[in-house]
Amino acid sequence: MPSMRAAVFQGPGKITLQEKPIPDVGPGDALIRITTTTICGTDVHILKGEYPVQPGLTIGHEPVGVIEKLGSNVTGYKEGQRVIAGAICPSFYSYACQDGCASQDGQAHGHGYKPMGGWRFGNTIDGTQAEYVLVPDAQANLAPIPDGLTDEQVLMCPDIMSTGFAGAERANIKIGDIVAVFAQGPIGLCATAGARLRGASKIIVVDGIDERLAIARHMGADEVVNFRKTDVVDEILRLTGGRGVDASIEALGTQATFEAALRVLKPGGTLSSLGVYSTDLSIPLGPFAAGLGDHRIVTSLCPGGKERMRRLMNVIETQRVDLAPLVTHHYKLADIESAYDLFANQRDGVLKVAITP
Image (tube, one colour):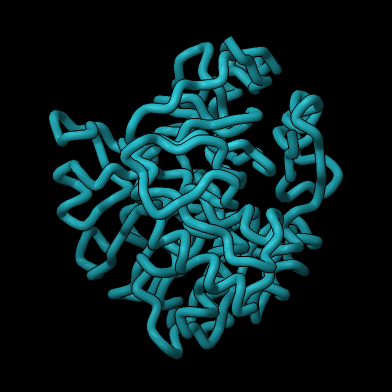
């Protein structure tokens, strides 16, 4: 049986490169030869044992590649075509999908419910940090890459860009709004870019790394706040004349950032939470106004599907946003363990790592 190399989760603290069989292609599937993928913060949660997946699973959920083989029921595509697929691969069969929430796809035919059910790559099925990946429900999920766009230009679309933009979309940002974005990792930077595209007139970003704050200005930030040098809540309230922000986006997943995002929010504002939390959250009584502040707290899981991917690639192709600065390091798949060590420990100014088989 033909085999391939894949980054496999062995247990907490251990992801190793192994040989696995190249998957068989079912009628609704597509086999993609990976040309570029990357490591996500969620993969690090898996590595640390903070998010449970089964040992033996191939990790990764951000595929850029070429169609190697199509299932018999998949039409409108051809072998050799360059494509991406979203980190979330909805079937569009489930109740959640048909009710307008494709990321919460649950069981394939709606029998039962599992939050994050649409996230399958590297969660419930083998993922993308391999030489090949099997894309389920390919008709709904394969998005052709426009001519002229490189792998690295579209590498953020499957997850980071889609998630960050969703944070801005769900924040209900209106033209002229003031928005605060907490944490300027890759998702927070995309949220900053998304807030600008949504029409925010002032974007205040928070991080503790000056280099990331500099990139945030490139993405559209108007004011930058280094939490290591100033009281974030006081500074944001000063910048808004005490009024607070219309929307705050939390892109890290800690109690401190969530609470600060709530404290700077105006009455009637929206807190859009993108962080993946590994401990319980507490909502402070004062900033929550005892539940009387007309606040909205919303969460988002990365929207997927081929139409979402098409729209995101349109934004890249028309140069509405430039995400090239997010790719800071390059590794071969053979060196993925070293790439994980770099990324998990956030060394050498790493934002995103391009991994090529």
